[in-house]
Length: 306
Ligand code: CP
Ligand code: NVA
Image 1: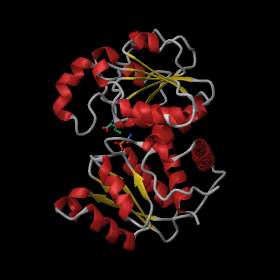
Image 2: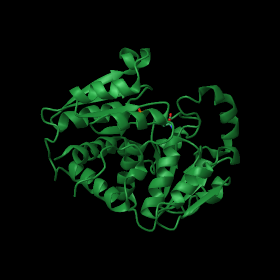
Image 3: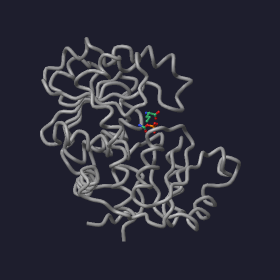
Image 4: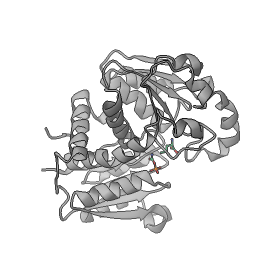
């Protein structure tokens, strides 16, 4: 199977069949069943307008292991942050490299980059979506709980990039998802509408009662309360989210024996998750982090293989 898309901007760029195929490819890379030099003699430019540890390192190592050269570009070191347009950057980079990844504060920028670049563009996190993260999360869920018949619960900020991508991915795969969040930080109407349009019957519930939500959960996922770019709202958010912390008390309401706790990281320990929970027996956060590399390899391999 070859992906027909040129770019990966949103998890919704995949249909169910494609999504499962990417996950299978990531699994094969992880197990060693698949070894490829898809990027031999090729370069990938990675532009970061925001900080990154996992995305940067997982792409960098994935590109290297696929035989290619990663070029790490902090945006303040290139002309893009000194007035050069996205259009010109797209045109120029397309003459040098074989793919571009962009982490950006504004989703419209990665869309514009993809529109004008003649090489594949991958969204390495925008304010709207974080598709590469969710691929690694789905891979982790498949390993630990399977993807069929499970109930996933997201506790925390219902209106950020990771939550949006998780909502869409669950909708594409028909996974039942409850988002437990303060009413003010619920998923946007447009996100729910988009999820509803993805083909399957939407199994999405929104609640502000995390204790009820986690009861039958197989997967309990959280993310920071203050995403990059929202720092000014930090104080207000910490107050609004205080009952949405993954702590031992909340976890005592989870009745499924084998439930897993996920976090895309970086975690703000003591805010959205306590040490006891993130370091506890149910936590799979470092498997998620590892899977970023396998998922990244799968994306690059499938987008760039001839
Ligand atoms: N999860 C994630 O994207 O981590 P980084 O911000 O460190 O890349
Ligand atoms: N929602 C977080 C994810 C970080 C990987 C952020 O955007 O900062």
